[in-house]
Image 1 (tube, rainbow, N blue to C red):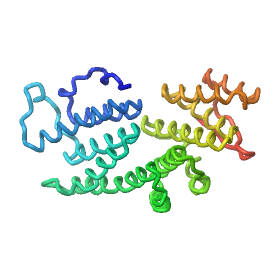
Image 2: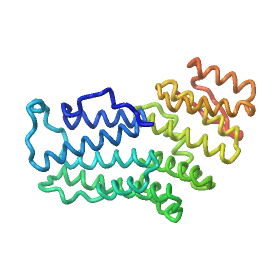
Image 3: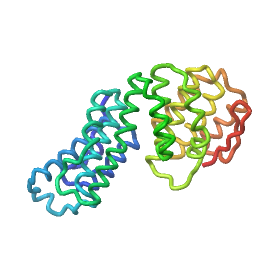
Image 4: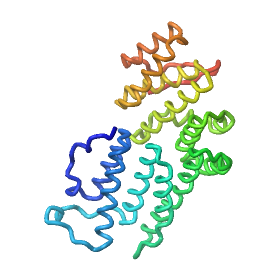
Amino acid sequence: MKENNVANIEIKLLDLDAMVKLIKGAFSLELWYNLVELSDALLFKVNQRLRGMTVTDSEELITPPQRPLVYYYGYSLLMKGSALKNLGKYHEAKHCIENYSDLSWFEDLNDEGLEVVDYFRYVSYPNRLEIELTLGNFNVMSEFITFLRENPDEILYGVIAILKAANKHHINVDQELSIFAEQINELTHRRIDVNEVFDTLVCAYYAEQTQYCLNKQSYQEAIHYCFLLASLSLKYEKIKAFRKAVIWIEQLRSFTTSSQIDTYISILKGEWQNEEVSINGDPVHVSH
């Protein structure tokens, strides 16, 4: 079912940078249909400017964009592709990726604009590989792993993509996950420079790990990741993620111990902090 329009905001009155902020909010809330709509609206605004169309009277006071126009063009396609991927429309997502993979056709690109073109070319590569994995083309797995090793800033995104593909096609990726275990543990448990997009990614990681462990019938690991998902999503008001965690916990109740139930109650009360838990005997420090 489609979401309602985002707060019924009058999109035509927003400048390009305000549109970007709205798009980031829709991504954080996982409002994928809204994200498609907003991305299309941003692309429409950019195309108006590219065609040299004059703004309406109501738009005359709009502040000038803070970035080159090519950024907003690429960003609209990037975020629309992300939304389509999450809606399961993989071939449409691939089309978006192809469209922002080469934006060198933009005219009058200065140094900043050329950097933007290089950035979207860079992100299009792993995004294309992710779609291939999601479609079941695991021949690109080694290529994807190599990219993540060479680009550690992309590891969290990449591991989520690997888990999603594994969950969709019911394959075992323990070996691939072990390569990045240390980095992922550090990333997911740090609470420095937190932003909404990062929190959304960490919630997505915990959710995919829970499902992956369920698929393997590793129920204690599933409970562990489910607790992490419940705690983080509750603290940062990620309602959809929290609902998902609660449903899983109820499904796993027959596998929980009394102490785990006590932990679950502590999470619901917002009292689960700085605790050490374990998976297969290995301690994992949880901080908030």
